[in-house]
Image (cartoon, rainbow over all chains, first blue to last red; front, side, top):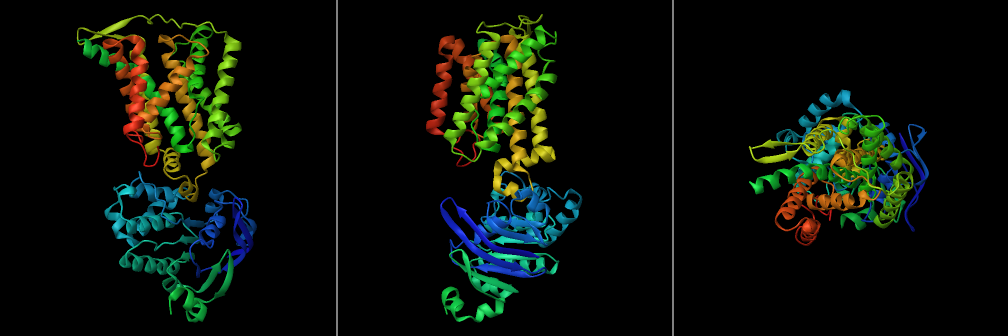
Length: 231
Length: 289
């Protein structure tokens, strides 16, 4: 479905992605794990077109490089950014409506779906986004992404800074989202939890892939155990 | 009754300041650009109203129907041709560009229209009506205030209810997230600059019947619009609305009780006080300072 082939991306003089290649199969959960600052977020930003990149990003066989972000959103690639980036002075419902910016005709049914998935958001629908707790903001950010009828959902650190209860909710939600037919590309620092739900996973260091395999294989891999799982 | 008289005339003048400030604030909020050509765009609005009146015999308040769309288009093109090139650049580049655009406008006006001040005299220019039996209100100021209220109300409705208005607010609150919603943020920037230019020109046209029209008139208004924005909080439309009214009233009070010559001094002291004690302004976004 998504193929990233020898992708390079830089911030000014600093090259962050070095010839990175990953593949995401339709209907799967693929995770990208690695320490802070190795280029995980940059990879997602390059895919959604927020930053320029060299190399090939193709989606259903069509090259995405050079398209502005709003066109990539139009193809069905929806990016839920790190740090939630919700609209602080808009209410919960307005935030969700912004998610449906390109999909007004399915707005109502998606709204019902999101409120079913996150009843907490339904309770707070009139509250402004900036006054929600971190966990609620994360639900809102994921819900806002689902409003856009994603075919491929890019999730950047969805469990970062959340309590264990909210972390459970987030990982359960990701599995539910996949069951509903949406492909998920997940970037996480919670390596154990994300490998456990992934069909395929990539370990990246310094802007390139150093290991890949199924989530289960990587969980058993001695290097992964030592570097990320503390065993 | 002197206090009510000052309050009323201050609020009426403040309405026009608010309109000018809202345009500048909207541009700052959505594009993160301080538009130093804003005053000169107001000056162009004054001349547009003047020529619509003298050449086409259109009442200055009615001429807004023409001036708003024409200036929107002008602003939209300015953004596409020039401002869009510096939107991701440091503030000093944006300031150089907008100051430069402003200089080109004021000096072109100087060449085309000479430095002679012009006066737009309507049949009702010097008439006034009495309210509360002993407070007199100038008719042109009252008309301009009413038109300002109408334009501001329409703008609020546009921002709150329409799809494009909501997209503008989203872009202002988080540009990157707005892109991820599928919003074409470069189009939003051009629309915003068009609206900002439209509001500046409208404010110029509204003040034309009570003010000397000359090519350098914009400079004074730029400082006022900037003060209004800082007072209200850069990027905040309600803040600029309230800020404009406050500046109008402060000016009127200091003109009445201190001296007309000192009113600008008092306004800028207020400006400095805001910068010192509440740099984010009355309604500023966090980190906006």
